[in-house]
Amino acid sequence: MSLVTTLSQEFRRMTPRFDNFELRLTTAGLYDAFLRQTKGSSSFITPALKQTAAMSPGRDLKIPVINYKDVTVRSTRPLTIVADENTSALYTVVWNTYAYGFKMYRAQHKNNDVSYQLDWNKKYLAMIKKMRSTIEAAAYTAIDAAKTQVLPTVVGGHTFATSLLSETGIATLNDSYILNDLDPSMNTNDFDFFGGDIVGNQGLNAILSRMAGFSKFNSENKTLPYQDKFMHFSNSIPDAGAAKATGFGIADGHLGLLTRVEPDSEMRTKLKTGHEWDKVNVPLLGIEMGSYTYEEAVDASGLGAHATHLTRTGAEVFDFAVDMAFVIAYNSDRTTIPSGILKFDIATV
Image 1 (cartoon, rainbow, N blue to C red):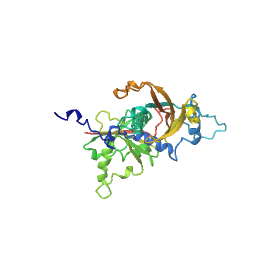
Image 2 (image 1 turned 45 degrees about the vertical axis):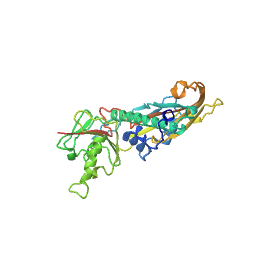
Image 3 (image 1 turned 135 degrees about the horizontal axis):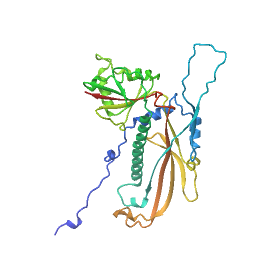
Image 4 (image 1 turned 90 degrees about the vertical axis):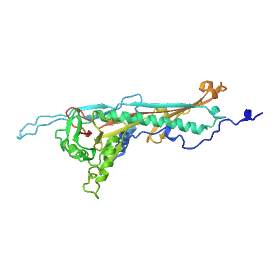
């Protein structure tokens, strides 16, 4: 005789925050720099441009510009002046769509330890996590493509090759002076770097932490060169070769972010069928996305062993989508005209 047949089965107890680290948001400094400069006083993203972007789905969005030209300064005063016309162009904004959707089945939570709201929250957070890392990677591609290919004078003993300002030969990362030299390097290209952005990977983060030891209370103050800058860090900036840290110096007013949603989201369309479009502010992304929701009857028995009985059940569908354009200050010929984006890296001996 025994009580084995009535032995309690496994014990369960939901514990808040126990699985918090399953979904971790990436450090997205490049995207943050786009957001900061877009909202800044020097931004070229005007309210009128935002309004035009919102109306542009299905059509190209173009920005009229005037190309750079070189002029000849005379040493004479001729009677007849020769015309010297400007050359205009149309810059076409390049859009990319970022979208994700999921379904919810209320009946599967009827006898489940995981609540409907917890399940929804985790799916939503998973979307935000992947959106953030995907958008950050796109921001890196845009900024890296726009880095200056021209730097006439290299200051501080650094080298400039393959559109990269490099610091090599230092014994330790503590000896780095490249951040001190970003301002004069920018000035070489006639850019004022005051109030700009510095975005680096975690290698640069480590160097800045070391620089904190050279504060005003120690023998050398290395913190001053970046006190007038906005510092960001990104996990999407790779090191190449022997580099121990890599980053970008970005002059203010160079980055702009445009977004748009589908027309029905703008109009907040609601159909009698239950299909609805709207606009929602997505936390941790800092942008407004279009939402699309509807309900349907489905066979959800394939969800797993817990749902084999749900051969006909209700499903709620949620989808989120946005078009984004990473716009960088116009440059008609990057091979000959300097950019206010300077890529740099640091390598020890």
